[in-house]
Image (cartoon, rainbow, N blue to C red; front, side):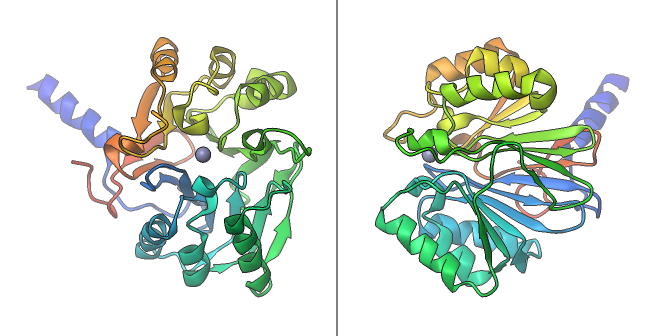
Length: 285
Ligand SMILES: [Zn+2]
């Protein structure tokens, strides 16, 4: 009986059903298919979007989820890098919410979708546009310490490696968003920041779980409890790569995948991350 009670208690701890309270940080990895779309609700109730999925349909689904949770305006949209699978959903996001600031990798990139995105930013009244630098801190919320771990628009560099990488710390709960940063950038970050600067309980696994990212050295430095892989079911890139899954297992990192689980949401009260139900506040099935 006691064992059952303990089991129920653990289940309640693992899947909190209570609504987010002021003071909580929520991180949502949206089900955008083959791409990436993340949103944050900060402890003071501001909304941040990091990448917007590959197309309008994905952007619409993200926008629906944000609106259902009370979002009316977005403090900052971060585009990790200008590949379509990270910005193709900008249309519905910009159409439905006022966007106050855009952070962009600033790579010279000439695709039609990227140009259309820059046009949308220009049309957005009062929207600030900036290209962050490695080491910048972002003052989104007094309860958060947000550091730009990497941003590099050097011409000729592999576009994935221009990715803006962010570390978001809420007291003892930390999250790293890597975009599609590959092993070269991971090595740079390990040498720039070391394990103290990289440690995070929650890690967005780079480049959709491709074997080009998530080196053992980087995993060792970040030492996450959970890694989240965003990729599409049956995608033609065969993401995630079995090597990456093996490396995560070897490092004892729990793996959450949008292709298998749909939208994935975590909440922090500043002490630890908890997985919460993705559909409003219902419990995950
Ligand atoms: Zn990508």
